[in-house]
Length: 145
Figure 1 (cartoon, rainbow, N blue to C red):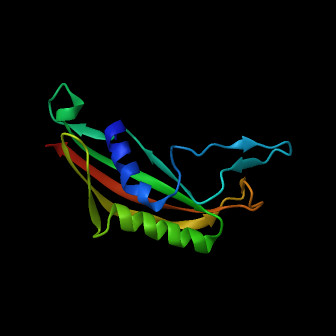
Figure 2: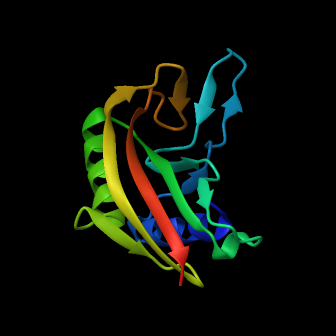
Protein backbone atom coordinates (compact mmCIF):
# COMPACT_ATOMS: atom_id res chain seq x y z
CA UNK A 1 0.00 0.00 0.00
CA UNK A 2 1.29 3.48 -0.72
CA UNK A 3 0.31 6.88 0.68
CA UNK A 4 -2.44 7.46 -1.92
CA UNK A 5 -4.16 4.20 -0.96
CA UNK A 6 -3.78 4.92 2.76
CA UNK A 7 -5.36 8.34 2.24
CA UNK A 8 -8.23 6.75 0.29
CA UNK A 9 -8.90 4.27 3.10
CA UNK A 10 -8.80 7.08 5.66
CA UNK A 11 -11.30 9.04 3.55
CA UNK A 12 -13.73 6.11 3.52
CA UNK A 13 -13.39 5.69 7.30
CA UNK A 14 -13.64 9.45 8.08
CA UNK A 15 -17.48 9.60 8.21
CA UNK A 16 -17.38 7.23 11.18
CA UNK A 17 -15.86 10.06 13.20
CA UNK A 18 -13.17 7.93 14.86
CA UNK A 19 -9.53 9.04 14.96
CA UNK A 20 -7.50 6.96 12.49
CA UNK A 21 -3.84 6.17 13.14
CA UNK A 22 -1.30 4.37 10.97
CA UNK A 23 0.51 1.37 12.51
CA UNK A 24 0.11 2.50 16.13
CA UNK A 25 -1.88 4.84 18.32
CA UNK A 26 0.08 7.32 20.42
CA UNK A 27 0.80 6.09 23.93
CA UNK A 28 1.91 7.74 27.14
CA UNK A 29 4.02 5.92 29.71
CA UNK A 30 2.69 6.55 33.21
CA UNK A 31 4.81 6.67 36.37
CA UNK A 32 3.54 3.24 37.46
CA UNK A 33 4.81 1.69 34.22
CA UNK A 34 1.38 1.46 32.60
CA UNK A 35 1.01 2.53 29.00
CA UNK A 36 -1.95 4.78 28.36
CA UNK A 37 -3.70 4.90 24.96
CA UNK A 38 -6.11 7.55 23.60
CA UNK A 39 -9.75 7.59 24.63
CA UNK A 40 -11.58 4.99 22.50
CA UNK A 41 -13.04 4.50 20.04
CA UNK A 42 -10.25 4.83 17.51
CA UNK A 43 -8.86 2.89 14.56
CA UNK A 44 -5.37 1.76 13.57
CA UNK A 45 -4.62 0.87 9.94
CA UNK A 46 -1.61 -1.32 9.25
CA UNK A 47 -0.16 -2.76 6.09
CA UNK A 48 2.91 -3.62 4.09
CA UNK A 49 3.85 -1.99 0.79
CA UNK A 50 2.03 -4.82 -0.94
CA UNK A 51 3.04 -7.08 -3.78
CA UNK A 52 3.76 -5.19 -6.98
CA UNK A 53 3.53 -6.87 -10.35
CA UNK A 54 4.34 -5.82 -13.88
CA UNK A 55 7.46 -4.49 -15.57
CA UNK A 56 6.89 -0.76 -15.05
CA UNK A 57 9.66 1.36 -13.58
CA UNK A 58 7.06 3.59 -11.98
CA UNK A 59 4.88 2.22 -9.14
CA UNK A 60 1.89 4.20 -10.44
CA UNK A 61 1.71 1.86 -13.44
CA UNK A 62 1.99 -1.37 -11.50
CA UNK A 63 -0.71 -3.56 -10.04
CA UNK A 64 -0.91 -3.76 -6.25
CA UNK A 65 -2.25 -6.74 -4.35
CA UNK A 66 -2.05 -6.26 -0.59
CA UNK A 67 -3.61 -7.30 2.67
CA UNK A 68 -4.23 -4.63 5.26
CA UNK A 69 -5.82 -4.61 8.66
CA UNK A 70 -7.92 -2.24 10.67
CA UNK A 71 -7.60 -2.69 14.40
CA UNK A 72 -10.56 -1.07 16.12
CA UNK A 73 -10.43 -0.10 19.77
CA UNK A 74 -13.40 0.64 22.03
CA UNK A 75 -14.08 1.02 25.73
CA UNK A 76 -15.88 -2.32 26.13
CA UNK A 77 -16.12 -5.56 24.16
CA UNK A 78 -19.75 -4.76 23.30
CA UNK A 79 -18.76 -1.35 21.95
CA UNK A 80 -15.98 -3.01 19.94
CA UNK A 81 -18.60 -5.17 18.20
CA UNK A 82 -20.37 -2.01 17.04
CA UNK A 83 -17.19 -0.23 15.91
CA UNK A 84 -15.95 -3.31 14.04
CA UNK A 85 -19.23 -3.72 12.19
CA UNK A 86 -19.20 -0.04 11.20
CA UNK A 87 -15.65 -0.38 9.85
CA UNK A 88 -16.64 -3.40 7.78
CA UNK A 89 -19.85 -1.74 6.57
CA UNK A 90 -18.14 1.41 5.25
CA UNK A 91 -15.12 -0.29 3.67
CA UNK A 92 -16.97 -3.23 2.15
CA UNK A 93 -20.70 -2.52 2.11
CA UNK A 94 -21.41 -5.39 -0.32
CA UNK A 95 -18.49 -7.60 0.65
CA UNK A 96 -16.29 -5.34 -1.45
CA UNK A 97 -15.90 -1.59 -1.86
CA UNK A 98 -14.32 0.89 -4.25
CA UNK A 99 -11.55 3.30 -3.27
CA UNK A 100 -10.95 6.65 -4.93
CA UNK A 101 -7.25 6.72 -5.78
CA UNK A 102 -6.11 9.18 -8.50
CA UNK A 103 -5.00 7.38 -11.64
CA UNK A 104 -5.98 3.96 -10.30
CA UNK A 105 -8.89 1.55 -10.18
CA UNK A 106 -8.82 0.30 -6.60
CA UNK A 107 -11.13 -1.82 -4.53
CA UNK A 108 -11.23 -3.60 -1.19
CA UNK A 109 -12.63 -7.00 -0.25
CA UNK A 110 -13.26 -8.22 3.28
CA UNK A 111 -11.05 -11.22 4.03
CA UNK A 112 -11.33 -12.16 7.70
CA UNK A 113 -12.04 -11.05 11.26
CA UNK A 114 -10.12 -11.70 14.46
CA UNK A 115 -11.82 -12.22 17.83
CA UNK A 116 -12.45 -9.25 20.08
CA UNK A 117 -10.14 -9.19 23.09
CA UNK A 118 -9.36 -6.99 26.06
CA UNK A 119 -5.88 -5.43 25.97
CA UNK A 120 -4.61 -5.82 29.51
CA UNK A 121 -1.26 -4.23 28.62
CA UNK A 122 -2.69 -0.73 28.30
CA UNK A 123 -5.23 1.58 29.95
CA UNK A 124 -7.54 3.89 28.03
CA UNK A 125 -7.09 7.52 29.02
CA UNK A 126 -10.04 8.98 30.96
CA UNK A 127 -11.76 5.57 31.20
CA UNK A 128 -9.34 4.00 33.70
CA UNK A 129 -9.96 0.59 32.13
CA UNK A 130 -8.41 -1.80 29.67
CA UNK A 131 -9.85 -1.22 26.20
CA UNK A 132 -11.25 -3.92 23.94
CA UNK A 133 -10.09 -4.39 20.39
CA UNK A 134 -10.66 -6.50 17.31
CA UNK A 135 -9.20 -6.74 13.83
CA UNK A 136 -10.78 -6.75 10.39
CA UNK A 137 -8.57 -7.95 7.52
CA UNK A 138 -9.06 -6.71 3.97
CA UNK A 139 -7.53 -7.31 0.56
CA UNK A 140 -6.63 -4.29 -1.54
CA UNK A 141 -6.41 -4.66 -5.31
CA UNK A 142 -5.28 -1.66 -7.32
CA UNK A 143 -4.53 -1.40 -11.03
CA UNK A 144 -3.60 1.54 -13.26
CA UNK A 145 -6.67 3.36 -14.58
